Image (cartoon, rainbow, N blue to C red; front, side, top):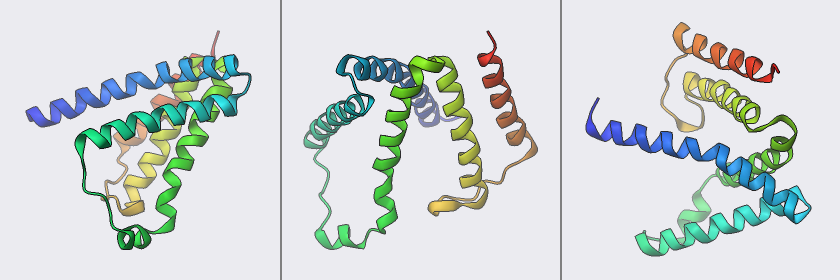
Length: 150
């Protein structure tokens, strides 16, 4: 494993470790504001402000209007996916717990990720599902079942 790959793995683990923290914070925010939808909206506004500062500091070249118009319309749905996820987290975390929520989310992510990789959907490179990858997904689902047991 190269140093670059190790850094990417560490950064990804760090980012993944923030998801349950985000779930707990957003769930509490939704309760405090009296509305899961308002909690999700505030979360996205704070995230957008953070991204705005990052963009201002990193100064990427802004796309032309022609380039923006050329982007396939379905690619704009990523933000909607995030909004559905954050709102779901706010609704589900207090009812199922953060561990079960995260386990279910990871199981869903793995199943869809495997399909995206296997068929190279959405322009991704093909990375076929192997028996060991399928077993990994099954083990994640079994882990979620165990998390549900009291």
